[in-house]
Image (cartoon, rainbow over all chains, first blue to last red; front, side, top):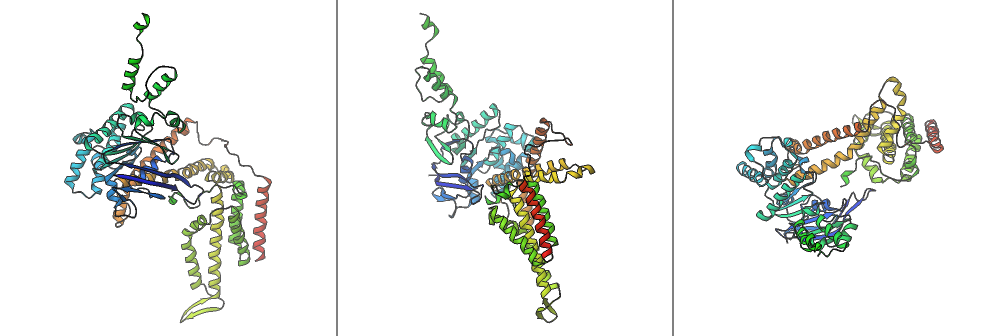
Length: 289
Length: 264
């Protein structure tokens, strides 16, 4: 098991009137090379959970293990771990600080203490992975890029450390549909071609459906549902109660079924649902006869 | 995440001290500060100290918070104590080593001044821990109103202070997020000599300033969109009303201060 979380608990500001129990005993595990989706309404503890996975937060109870070794009190160097488990925060472009795209991307690998030549190689490779042209962009200011480019640069700035896993906290928020599409394409490619383990938090179920192995649903500091997308999204009533939206195609099929159309549930993508509807609905010509 | 709390930060509660009108709280505070500085001897100071300890107890603020607030001023307290003990002369000689003496007046004055400072901090802590910054600036604005006739823009200054206070927690949260994000990229914050430490701060300070300016810009736009114009009469959402209790408390504090100054 690559990442293991056992009965994880986290309390913010314990012992004050501001005390918040953000995680109340969360357990889950991720195998190498898996693509995991996490969903949950605001304040369900998703971001807190993510920050435990690379040791940015220390658990108040329970533990996190990487390759079987506990993160705290064990032999793991947190600094090294953070380069193995790359983390892309929400609005990652808000952390830009360097004068050039090159410096921004080189920050991670330089911190790893790599020699200059290797850092350059890493930067080239990382920018290439997110379809940014190294020669064209390396001397520009990161603050001058477009929104979508900034987001991809932020992703490259983490990829340049060559992590084994990528943790993404709502990577597409604030992007336009095209920027979203592009970024998701890159993430999916990293998973498929490089075998990166991916853990992604999102509010948009449609971003998870085609790619993920499993979806976890969080609600008020607990994992409430878990399974393959088809299983999870079949529990529409529970999801609604927890404030989680269904993928649009699932919602459509459900509405149609309620109105008496004989459609089979369990179809998740627009294509599948289109096909299902096309085969089940009688054509106007047939009706005329 | 206990670093999320700043010294003297408001702690919600529902006691008499919390419910008092912030203006009368502020006036009483000023009266007590005046009293603490004029009271000439121990008996009067003890009255103030006992009173503030009782009030702190009744307002149910956590004693840990109060002690934390005391910490930064401890250096000054210690310094005055030491300086008085060694350099103020007079009274019975308590200890002698060659030319060097510690005399009664020195010890007396040292302890007195130290206690005076601590009492002062207790009173201010009592007010800041039980009053929201918003109420506090509101009260300050009210009390400074007469300065308007001197063409001092009191309301605008109050708005500036309010905004600054409002954004302290936001910026603290932001900086902790940026620190985490850079740590996730392998940044080594702290550690090394002064030069290295300063250099390590660049990846934190630059994004923090960028975001502060972005927020300022957004806030300015939002305020303009709601027709904010400086120098215009404005009513406020929360009108603080002074009740009879408030007047009584202010009167009582005045009497107490006069009494305490006279008994010593």
